[in-house]
Length: 158
Image (cartoon, rainbow, N blue to C red; front, top):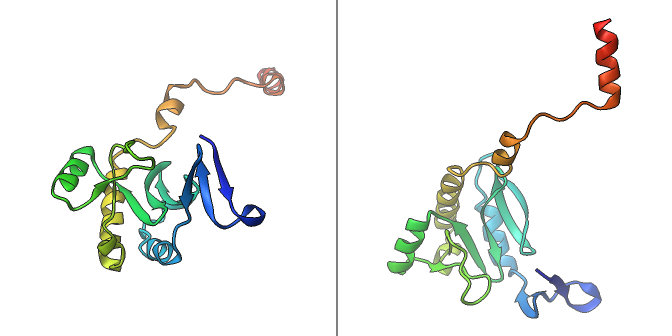
């Protein structure tokens, strides 16, 4: 996906993806997101879509996107929340929802305890997933010995 920052001198402004300009997250939304960060020490912050996001075990918990905050929920919960009009599906591009993610209602973003509740729920859901890379690593054989290791092993056997 083509993503580039648009603005004067390469900064500021917006983020562009495939010709669609994305807005920067407003400072008040970013501050609310940072203040509601789950207390679990395994949670790390890194960018996703050029925005701040929280991850645990390599899986995204949630993040900011333009002027909203999105969180991971189970696919069943996502359907229930959308049906009950308690959240909207998260669509980074119109008509292309990300399964298992919803946007936190703006009223809850403005309430620190409510936003923390959404992120704690997302953390709990994310912790049910296998760690990224765990399945790949489990299927791989151990690393091959280097020539130096083989020589050292031969010498040790003598």
